[in-house]
Image (cartoon, helix red, strand yellow):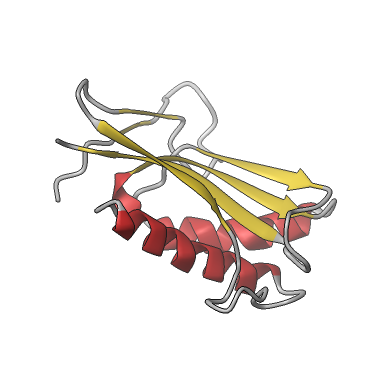
Length: 135
C-alpha cells in the first residue's frame, strides 16, 4: 500500500529529536485512531512485568495487530503518543528507543510522556497512534 503520510522535517528546529516535527495527509484520506496499545498477552495478563523495553515491544506488536485490522501498518501512522509510567527520564528513553526502532525510517511525529499510572496491573507502557489510508 502506498502511504498517504508525508513527514515534514524542519531546517530551523533542532535535529536532536528522533522524529519528524509534523506530518500531513491529503484530503479524502481515511483516518484510523487506535486505542492505546497495551502490553497485554492474549489471555489479558500483563507481559514483561517490570521491563520497560519488553513492554514497549509488546505494545508495538499489539499496535501492529490493531492497525492490520484496519488494513494499515506502521508506515501509515501519522503520529504517536508514548506513555510511560515513570518519573525517570531513563525509563522513558528505554521505552522510546524500542518504539523508535520499530518505526525505523518512518519517524513519525511523536510525544513521549511520563505518567503516574496506567490502566492495567503492572503496566508501564502504552502507545496511541493515528494512521491515514488512501481511499
